[in-house]
Amino acid sequence: MTQSPVLPQSSAGEPSPDILPPLSVSSSELSPQDQAALEAAYRSLERTSYAARLTNLLGRQIELASSMIPEVARKIASRAADKALRAAMHVALRSMVAPTTETGKDAPDASSSRKGIFKRATSRHMHRAFATASGAAGGAFGISSLPLELPVSTVILLRAIADIARQEGEDPADPETALACMQVFALGGPVATDDSMDSGYFAVRTILARSISDAAKYVALTGAASETAPVLVRLLSQITARFGVIVTQKAAAQAVPVIGAIGGAAVNFAFMDHFQSLAHGHFAIRRLERAYGAERVRIAYESLRLKDLPKDKFTPVKT
Image 1: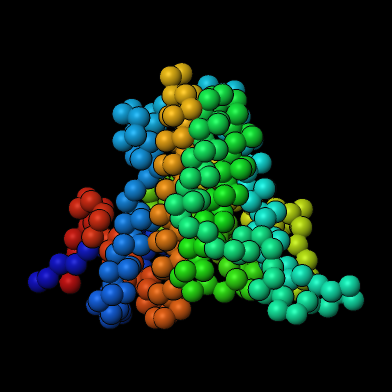
Image 2: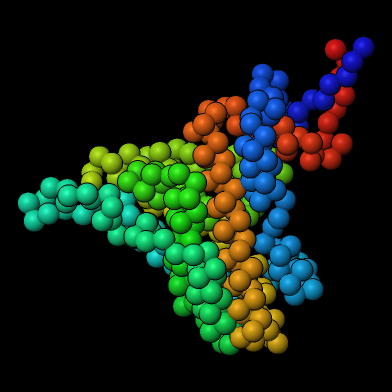
């Protein structure tokens, strides 16, 4: 008799919803080039954490340090994360609404004249340089500067993410594209209510799918956008909960007394590099979905994830 693995189970005993068995579609159905792109995206999205980057940078366990961060610093990080994403959402919303003429009609070639994150392309190195300079300024003043420095860094980062989206063939005229850029901020870390199966890339996309769909429909139907709209407030709240994990780790690193301006610049460089790497993975997956279909890409992706799971996550059954 042969044995086959049983998929990881949720706490309720049901198959985890963010894992699909690679039974009907094989990853080999992707072209060699696209298979390589899928594997690179998987590595970016599942294998490298911001905490690991900081640990390599500073030589200390940032996850442990962030769990021991004083409550006052944790509150500063939480407020900074909220303020930063509100600033980023404001810029993203400007990208979703086409300019109008005085009569209220769409301006000629409105999609190309939109403001916000798709206004112009900038090199990845330039975005990193801007964010690194911002981090250096913040590092000189320690964690207390985070509410001022983080919104600047986050908006710069959002523009870098938008450039990556454009490179992967996303349509700047589609409101969902700008929201997909905002979604990248939720990919960086799990929240306290997550179990090990809820923090994977497709699990996070599933959690945010309804909110992003509702927000895109709202913008498309109203032709206007405000951060105070309930559908956008709900989406922003979901993203902030996850983004806040990374910001707390960033705050823990910046709270190191001797880190200074040079260390602050390095922390921000790692912050920028981490989210740009996530963006490359995210929009590569979306490009593959447009080419092969969402289900086929997800199953191919999950086949890679299953290979990464420890053996104790499987239960052999006889067939």
